[in-house]
Image 1: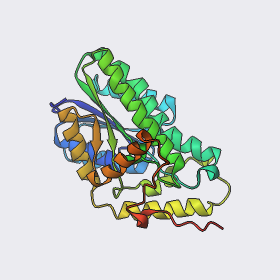
Image 2: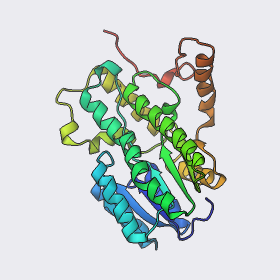
Image 3: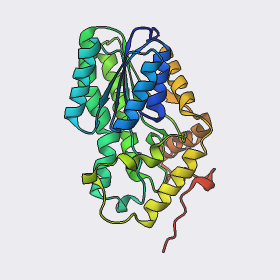
Image 4: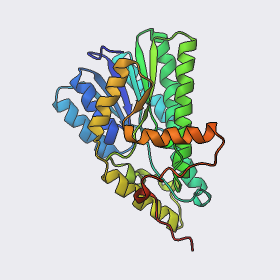
Length: 292
């Protein structure tokens, strides 16, 4: 997909971070936008900004973990514009801690947004995109955590590995039916976005009653520090993603310096070695835990 003028993009998690930059870049390229986010005030601000810049925009408050919400998003998009050409399943949240200390509610929240949000997006939009016969592309936002397994981030790692697997399967299935639709998986590392504060949008019914454990506090501190120290901006990631769409490139890796660590992980698998510490070359990023 190389012609964006007049095409329609649906973006989840559109009120901040990567999603907002996807929307800004799509608007600059003449796209019509359907923006979805669970945070109503931030969504309204993004919608107003883009409309003031001359873009055609529809904003829909959506909890992507809810199938009915994503169904409503698809219906709204097709009612407004009659087509969808570019789908960004981008909404995501972060949570960490020792994997045995994550509660059932932690798993439900993170998998609900990071994985089920993508599942719902694929199920609702891809059949409609196929039926139109028009060219299209699906971008699912994963993470380098979908290729590596950093300690103290188990619930997040699981969710992002699943997104990588889902998107690779989507790519093969689209090829199998000779669809005129491409697919890409976005795997960024640390970028200054709001994901370290994603708990601000955690539903009340999925909040934990108990205080965070020491490992969860350490994970929060480590991620906040790493995210704020990221040198690549969300706008840089958006530009790299659109370039990948134009080139029909599946894997979107935004931080090439981390690729040797990814390669090492797969070498461990091929050589049947015990897993290597992903923080071996950057111990300053490793969460600091008191074993006691």
